[in-house]
Amino acid sequence: MMNHQEVLAVYAAMADLTEQMVAAARGSDWDQLVLLEQRNAAHVQTLREHDIGLPMRGAERERKIELIRQMLNADRQIRDLTMPWMAQLSKLINATGTERRVVSAYGSV
Image (tube, rainbow, N blue to C red; front, side):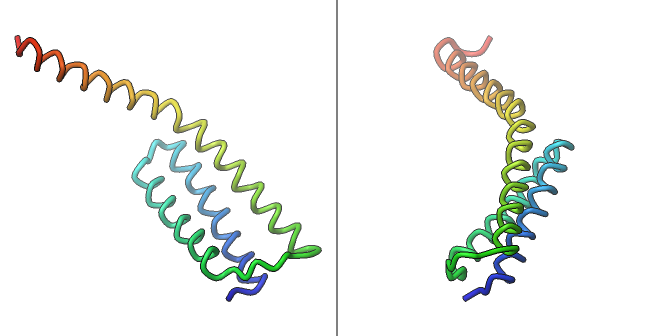
């Protein structure tokens, strides 16, 4: 089981990773973004398995809230940066699927 300081250390690591994810998204470094997201998911799993879930009070609680806000802000930025790329990727996939159906139905020219 993790104590409050250990939990806060994990939250701080996650906040740092999400900031790195923003930088990766800004640079269109999708492979790095995926790696960072996987590392972040490992931290989430650690919290699920080891956080005793006792409520924090005072400065510890405020720190946890601030870290969560940082992560939510970074997540919003990542979404804003990745949505246009995802839309473009979706168009490419749909166009490829349409092309395959046309070739299948009518043959290649």
